Image 1: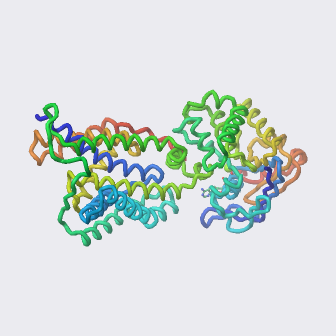
Image 2: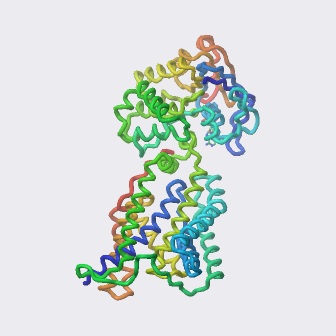
Image 3: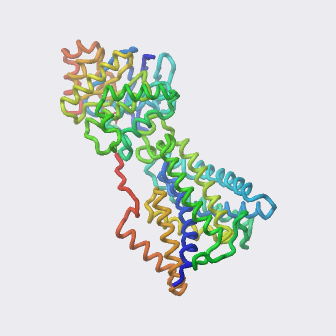
Length: 291
Length: 241
Ligand SMILES: Nc1ncnc2c1ncn2[C@@H]1O[C@H](COP(=O)(O)OP(=O)(O)O)[C@@H](O)[C@H]1O
Ligand SMILES: [Mg+2]
């Protein structure tokens, strides 16, 4: 076995964690699990990759993609989620409607970009060129990605300690009680969809230097992000980070000792084992919801 | 700061099921008005309509003359009408302090004003100061009720509506809660009090309405209603028969 799997596993796991955090941002105030999340990630990657190819600086491409995809997330809330939640907050029809929205994005992206992956270089001063440090092979971009992910998740957790962040948690716990305290859940949902989709777009761009921007990015990251969210405890961002890293490391380890056919199955078995022991995920709290 | 609440001939229901029919109440500024009636009479439904959780299909709800019927709940809270719902609806996963902080959501008070609200709530309910760090979900029933009222008080209500605040509480805690309600009236807050403990509610109320099967069956000064048959009949007439 080879210690190179540690940075490469953590870097891939960071991307899974970021996808999971995107899920969580939307889930917290709405209790809706957005099945279009993977497509929003992919769309963000395609838009920013094209913008960078057209000569836009990295940061500008990132902001443009986040804003555009944010608006597409807002539209998803407006078309596919808000009408359902308004009729009954207990309805699960959003499973179908967010899946439908994801198929629409998927089709549109296929028409606009076609199947060819787009290469994206990391932003200055980082590079995917590998070097050795303490006998481990890594790259500056891998290390930056791992550190940035940790910092962003800490920052997001700080947000949930502010009054607005507490209001988001309050809506998740008891929507009517939140309404009676002057909290407008619809407004929080709109913000969450905008920011969650923008976050997905950023995840897509961050994934591109190591995974390429392509229409294949959506489905693979959707599943991995979903697994990280479930294993970390739905709604729990720190859990998503730990679960994403476990998932990334398990994959890298499986890839180095098992034949590729067993790799996916072995990580899946590991995640299942964790969920059997901890059904609400590593950090999931029992949801004591009053009815 | 005090305000008058007038409910004029409202119809309220759930979907197509009507519950309240042409219900009218006049709640004078700075008074305690008790709203009594058997289970299922429509008391909670009426409070939900005032706070905007339900929209009346007919009639008007006037706050100092302005019609607030159909407004969004957050706007009604902004206007100073606070509703402490049945069953101590708190954010149980969050601490006592965080619940009070959430009570300030949307408030335009400056820091000094916010501190004054905390001071008032902790003065009325000292136990909340002691348990500030505890999760709301682990408090006793009485403490949860105090927290629910305290949370509403953070917004400095002009009209405070309390739905069965004594439900399931020990008698000594009920005394404490009713005592706070009387003190709030003295400070000018208009109070709508829905209570199952009718005698206790009529003791502290200025005026009372009896609701029966979604209609106002009678009303009058609390002292008069306490000795009349109207209240007893309302309980015999519906729900238990
Ligand atoms: N969420 C609801 N959906 C449908 N009907 C309801 C709902 N809540 C209450 N009701 C009905 O409205 C009527 C009045 O209920 P409610 O206002 O809770 O009475 P009270 O508070 O006086 O006990 C009852 O017949 C009850 O069954
Ligand atoms: Mg009731």
